[in-house]
Length: 110
Ligand SMILES: [Zn+2]
Image (cartoon, rainbow, N blue to C red):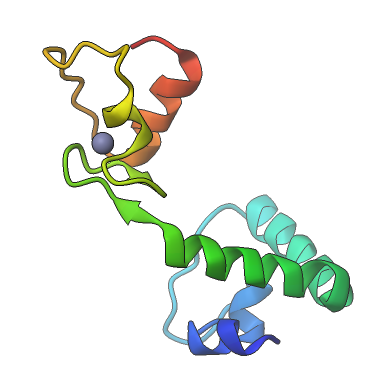
């Protein structure tokens, strides 16, 4: 397991979705099985999949910023949405979380 994952508190059992004492079960059985299969595939292909993925996640974590204007997560500050000159700055859309904002962006409804 890469050192970055160990420093982040990722253990082998957490990576493959095994139940640990004192930890609540999350997700359906099918989702846990799917996550376990994905984790095992990564572990089997450590050099060509796991290590590049860990490096990419580390790079993304280092670059990500929370936009000081709207709270979006992006690599730019202010975020790409706030820097977009085509948007109407008088219009505000309130969402519960960033995932909802991204869903609206994918749907191109705002
Ligand atoms: Zn923003």
